[in-house]
Length: 375
Image 1 (cartoon, one colour):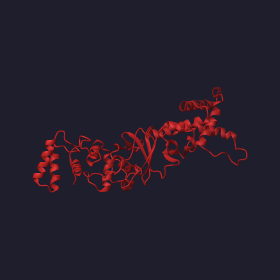
Image 2 (spheres, one colour; image 1 turned 45 degrees about the vertical axis):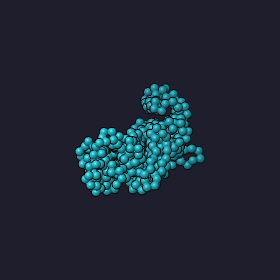
Image 3 (cartoon, one colour; image 1 turned 60 degrees about the vertical axis):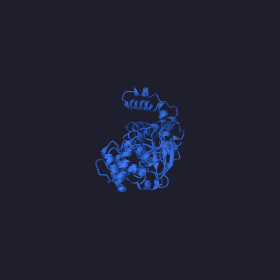
Image 4 (spheres, one colour; image 1 turned 90 degrees about the vertical axis):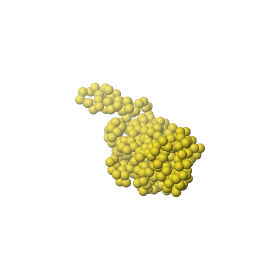
């Protein structure tokens, strides 16, 4: 057993998670470890006496970076103590590997970057780390109150793999966040939502948006006016049927832009005068809805600008909950290929092609993250 290994085992067995020569219990544990190494009593006493003589001010696990071996297992253990991670996720990993509570979880051999203030980036899990990454792929924490070892699909594939990769390489303190409106993980307090799409490119589902009532109302106003004007237009010349139906639950960027064209035309009508006509309260309702639309979307002079503002308003509540503006949405593949997208609202508004990459299908939000947030 090397000195690093001895200190590591002593740390795990100590009461505080790090050895303290002032603790009789920790001294007893050290003597037990040394005895198991077949050292005689005299050698054990000499080692203990020397360590006690070095206190205080010696190289203990509470004082980081004092042994001159920043990459040693001792220094990694010091970092683990200051960044404890998630006890439940660790328990799931230990249960899967058949480890006892006092046995260390294997650590990644490589370091992987994460800059909270940085932008979109990619990583590739390397070498031996990929074995554990794949092994942990389908692990999930149990439902609240359930025993460790039971499964819960409240978490997706790759979530615990990503947790292990960053937490146990001591890159950053990582916590799991149970709850449907929370991001899957927090990296040092920053939201990180984990997805396991089959590829990084293309439109991907971001979940249902039925709870976002205000956004549904805005889309209802836009597509309601579009439907009203379309019905009056009838079947286009040379067409056998009316245009394909679109609605707040199913549309693409082009549909949204076309609908905003109709909204702009409608806004040129003197709705105030129509709203004053007795018995025609429908115009009063239309006027109130248009005012609501302007209040939420702000100033826009073209259908393109209005549609882009609506597209941002559409995805905002979802990404605000998880991971949040400035957080990361990461797509993980079992091959170890991971893409971290930095979520920045401004990119939606400034991207001239944003409408190509946002839409809805049967109340499912569809977003191309690579095109919106990849640069």
